[in-house]
Amino acid sequence: MRRLTKKKALTLVKELDAFPKVPESYVESTASGGTVSLIAFTLMAILAFLEFFVYRNTWMKYEYEVDKDYSSKLRINVDITVAMRCQYIGADVLDLAETMVASDGLKYEPVNFELSPEQRLWHMTLLHIQERLKVEHSLQDVIFKAAIKGSPPVQSESADNSASHTACRIYGHLYVNKVAGNFHITVGKSIPHPRGHAHLAALVSHDTYNFSHRIDHLSFGEAIPGIISPLDGTEKVSAHANHMFQYFITIVPTKLNTYRVSAETHQYSVTEQDRVINHAAGSHGVSGIFMKYDISSLMVKVSEQHMPLWQFLIRLCGIIGGIFSTTGMLHGVVGFLVDVVCCRFQMGIYRHLKEAPLNEQANSETLVPTENSHTQ
Image 1 (tube, rainbow, N blue to C red):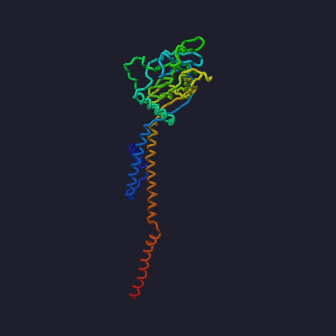
Image 2 (cartoon, rainbow, N blue to C red):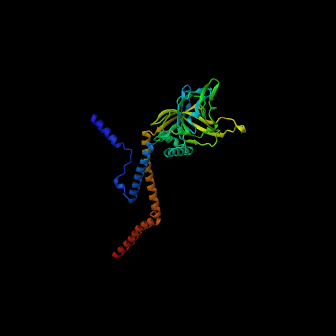
Image 3 (cartoon, rainbow, N blue to C red):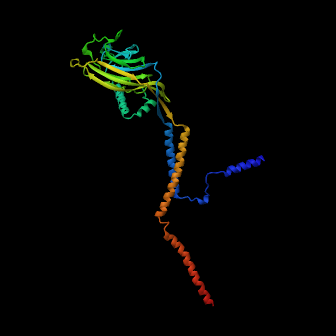
């Protein structure tokens, strides 16, 4: 009984075939059919190869939510070169609550404002990328996924002492409260004051004022090597001593989760404004570099997405099946049109073939009575 049951099951499976089978005697091999088959297999190979590259590629997904983390500290990463000596300038942060943040994390290094050829090439490359980012925002996805390889060249040490250096590089990081604030670089070292904020600017000669500067890097949050911020590569040269440079920055908390980097950083947008201060004409202000920042209440989650394997297989099957069906239909339509153009379906051909047997039958009917009459 078990053997009979197995045989019946095997017979049922063999008979259950949803794909149509055409006898070989009904199939005719032609040159056009072989050409269409070669074209179809070539297209399938090319499209499958391109689809594989699409499967390997990734894209960035952006999601928004309310930032609930307001108690943690915000890190400011700074690397700015100012065309003044280090003993004449000071940098610090004053937040919205008039609280001055200690600038112990910042370092002052005497340098030359002019760049070496290697540094100038790196700077021009960075400016070119910034210009492209303003036009093609999709490049930011590439930067998130791959970033810039390598690091900027370091200025070579010379035999000259620090007294010959006319500029000052301010670099390092600060931790501030997650409220609006003002990071600034101005004349004189900052001193704590019970009633507010003050700089020792009276001891600095007015002739030494020069706030031409270059921002090599300015970012907020965790420092991620290779990520380009909007102010990276900015260079401002001023011919006036009393010059105020202002940058209004809007910071957006960002969680970056890619296959290479997983970190919490802060992206930002910026608008610029600079003006010459002329006290004789009634203008007010303080010479220096001021970066006024505000933090958005929204958080952006940036994640790198990849096509699932099952979706890739479905798309691959769709390509193969679609080409099979399309080429079959096109071959049939083109064959029908060729038959019509070649006049194979003209009525005259079939009329000639139909009249030929009728003429033979008429001739045979006229001959028979003649033979019979002759015999009689």
